[in-house]
Length: 320
Picture 1 (cartoon, one colour):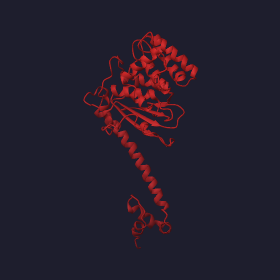
Picture 2 (picture 1 turned 60 degrees about the vertical axis):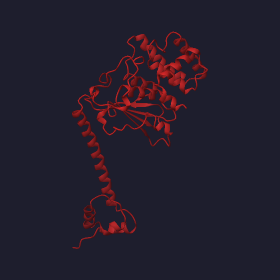
Picture 3 (picture 1 turned 30 degrees about the vertical axis):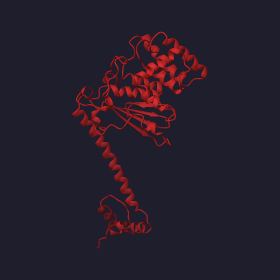
Picture 4 (picture 1 turned 90 degrees about the vertical axis):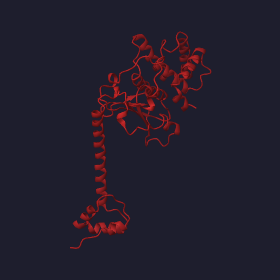
């Protein structure tokens, strides 16, 4: 019985990457008429489509397996990435100002022991309402930890301004070596009603709302005040900032500014003598409302103090 040649398939300019013996097998076992008819009409043989789909599925499973193996390799090669002082990163070469964040946070205490594997934080945000506070906290995280930062654009968003695509800074040159980092921070611009964050992608329900996500991220930088009254004040100011200063009416915003001016008349920062999440929230929410030139005197002084820290530059760049 004569063997069919593969040459007609090549002449038909069908771009395939499966072994030719698979196609020869299909032709030898009763599909020759169908294949020849498909080739004559410029169509792709259904059997070819099936094989290509199977190949894609196999490749997907191989990539998943590779990711699993990479995770196991990190456990073996870096038993405790949090204490690995031999690895340096340009995104974390600067140290946090001791005058701003005086206490540190143990990642394991907040996120759980992970044997050196990279802990990924994934945030979904709407580009129509950029979460300015999260950009500020991301910058502070980069000064405290080795952070692998990436930005993606979801298909639900038609277009995103260039400054949003690059809002987390340039791609790190060592991004291929995930074991060199302590945290992964992935920002996805997506058509969502409110900010969503997941830390454990498989087992965790999303944390929703910029205020809630900001609280989570700040706990990676410094614990809340040990004084229950001060901690309650921080939470109260965070809620006031996001729900009234940023999203309230003009009357509500004016009332918040008066209260803020009164608080800043008693202390250099919103809650006491130490910089806290309340300062991040209030500054970013004021930034959304435009220049603070019409704000009361104490608020204007506080705004200049925040600007002098340099931590708010990522948020200020998006408002230019």
